[in-house]
Amino acid sequence: MRILAALLAVSASLHVTIWPSGHDGKKTTWSLGCSPAGGTLPHRTTACRRLSRLVRPFAPVPRDVACTDIYGGPELARVTGRFRGGRVDASFNRRNGCEIERWNTLSFLLGTPGSR
Image (cartoon, rainbow, N blue to C red; front, side, top):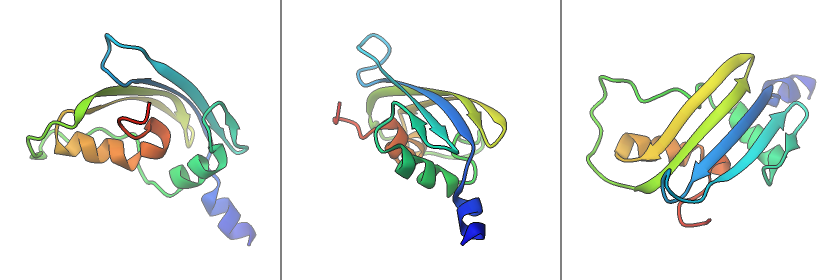
């Protein structure tokens, strides 16, 4: 049981800013700390558990990847802080299929478009 708990534990100290209507609109901010779970994000323990299962949740879309030309909305987000001992400074948008997938993977942290 301790081994499973150690695998699920993840160190994180994150600050999340979301602009549901783009940079010109209102923004929402919250924080998330893991090990132990804390911050202002609702459902912190669940968010930490879900983050622990992801290998590189804040990695950008590789430059050599072809993405579908589909627009998912004006939402923008930025996540800064530390994750697994490394620095995080990641930007998110919904401007193409790859970015939409990236956002959806972290929807527990960034929110679901239209829910704010």
